[in-house]
Amino acid sequence: MKYAPLAAALAGLFATTGFAHADTTNVTVYGIAQAAVSVVDDGVTRKTIVEDTGSRIGFKGNEALGNGLNAFFKIESKVALDTGASAGFANREGWVGLQGDFGTVKLGRGKTYFDLAQENFDGFNGNSTMINSLLIDGAYYRASNNIAYETPDMNGFVAKLQYGDMEAKNDTTGVSPSAIIGSAEYNNGPFQIVGAFESQKDLALAVADGTKATVKGNKINNYLLGAGYTIPNAGTNFKLAYRQSNFKNGAVKADRDTWIGVVTQPIGNGNVRFGYTTLGDVDSNAGTISNSGGSYWAIGGDYALSKRTIVYTEFTRASNDDNLAATGSVLETSAGQAAGHRSNSAWTTGLIHLF
Image 1: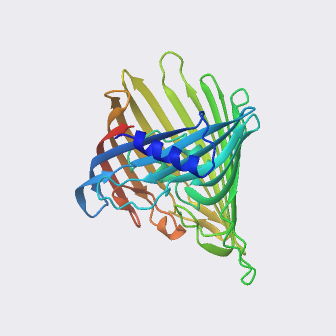
Image 2: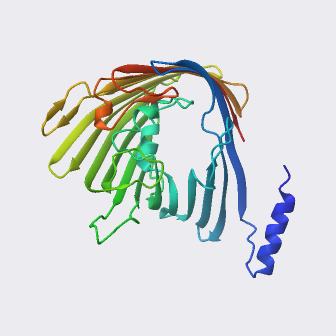
Image 3: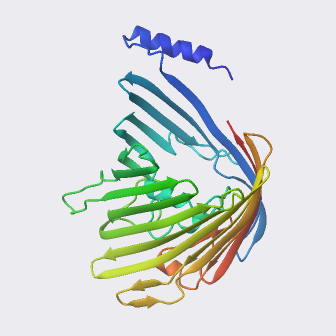
């Protein structure tokens, strides 16, 4: 595609409206096209599907304002290569902000800092990735209406904080929702330490890709602490994280512990990975809900055909205990959600192209 005519038209528009066009302004078109063939089994039906595994297209740019200050934007939209069903501009990410020696301040919508911290412990490519095993227990994936701040990199340490989802406040009903989410990461050579938290008020427990429904009196807190280490020369990377989820509504209180671990071994132009997640039973002030946990494991590998094209294959299995669905949570793969004591699995082989 040729972008020169579009760029010239935009430049002319700004000139006629009195805006100065800075030579230091740039706009980049980027994205990922990826799709896969999966053999999925939800415990009842086994079938073959073609699925988009996270394709997207985005636009990003920045302008140097002087004295080390930069303005930037990012707009990213979903693309469904399999059905064309995804719709909506900026339905993945949409940010505008300023960046300088003080760090980064931005407004908009996108993945939460808690979710990005969790994704440090993923490493897989398809829709049946390890992150599916953590998008439960009220954890936010993407959030809307955010005010966010990120510190500059201070010798490997970076902290991030965001506040959002506050617009559904209603003084008549007494509902005043909000989400405060933060993370901190430290990288020093082969070592990595990641911590994150999210505190949600008057928001639904159900996972949502955007603004959540309101539930008066609901309080959700999630905490994550993890670490990683890469063996020098061999390149073997080990990551392990612990997450605790707390829920409260009136006199009802409950919590759950989750562990997730991933091992990655580079081999030539490729990588081999193994990941495992285990969810404990929900403990409430009325006692432990037995058989309310589950487990999730994945194994796979990828091979880079070039700097931009990757082929991969992965197998994942999610096993739900009898009462996991009763807690408002289920583990799932591309096969869908397995209710009750049932396992679902997916064998996925796909292609990724970066542009």
